[in-house]
Length: 244
Image (cartoon, rainbow, N blue to C red):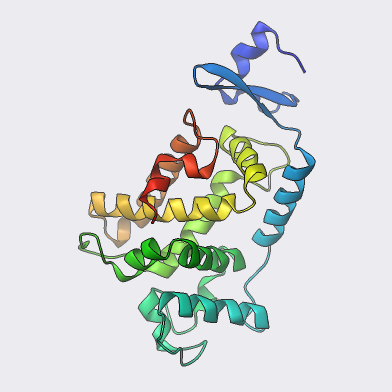
């Protein structure tokens, strides 16, 4: 659809288009208004459906594939160290709250385990550095790694608002464009979010009581980067360079 001057003023760089029934909106990037479409392409629709399905899967300790994913996470986290059981005090070494990590997935579901496993396999150096608290200055109070990971998944799900019938933020619309370029955009964004959170944690010298505040500031940083000029893929985000 075309835009007159009034529409451009209402939509360019502003969420004022929301709820106006528009199929496309102008979004200011590189000094010009670029068009972001609410009507999804068939590829975007399919990838969004897949991602939504992943987000709705609850962790089920009775399912063999879920058990296998947990074992794979342990192997990727502690190579060469045998896991004595899916319920074991060993899990506390990774930052789970108790002997049974399945109880910590309630907030974000199976996708939070998939995210951790993706991080461990794709950016093993960064993953190990954050898990073992190595290669960076020590914090006065270290956050529980695994539980933090589950909370990051939940934060991203809220930020992207993917269950909404129509986009309510530019961040969601921009992410759907990125998803059409890379099916693993959500998982990549998770990895970026984790290293941003760790960086902000250290810069603030945060404590347990400030964890939610650090998550909020992490979200703000992610939203800022996703809307930057020249950020057309997750890999273009400045904080992506923190990963290795």
